[in-house]
Image (cartoon, rainbow, N blue to C red; front, side, top):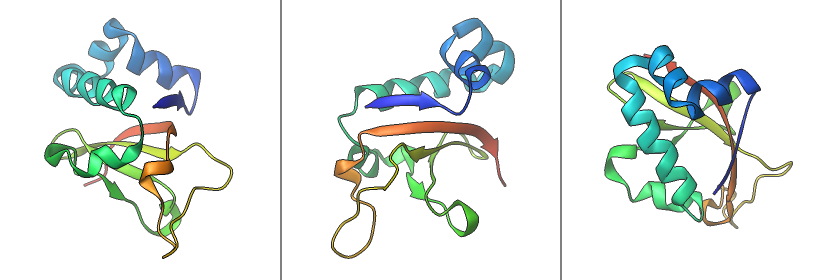
Length: 110
């Protein structure tokens, strides 16, 4: 999968091991694991099959964003990186066609 980031600061925090550890501490290992899984995936559909990832689409103002589980409270939040998100006939996002994402943030939203 092709991955971009909301800004250079977030990219540095997530992709540089020393920055990742400094910013996220004990969560750094799980963030690295999820990023490796994202990079290795051909598309987003695989995350529906990874039980611990708990991929889910957000709602409300964040309806075109997704989150995957990092810990009990923290989620990696991203959106498909397309001007028009690929959709299925029933109107839902076509996860098999989502091959580019933009990481927006790591957030405790509980």
